[in-house]
Image (cartoon, rainbow, N blue to C red; front, side, top):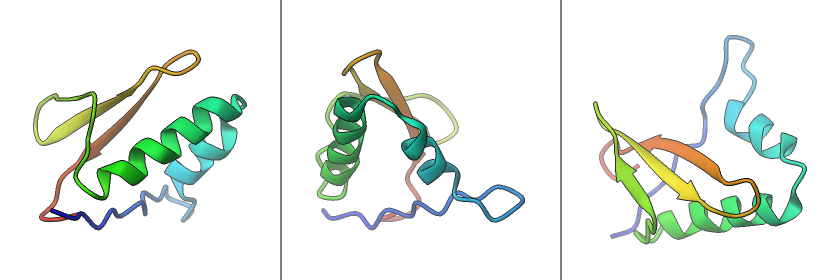
Length: 77
């Protein structure tokens, strides 16, 4: 199953929170790892993740200091 991710998590000033966080990562290896993992999610390969509660999931990325990406499924998005 393919997923159509919606990265448009905006704050009150219409700033993209996800992109701002990604831009703030100083470790290039970690940044590439995050981008690759999120891209793999689009084709249904979620890898190391867990369901938390209320539809929220945690994607674990153990590169560098280790990072977590939180997401939710809404239909096929």
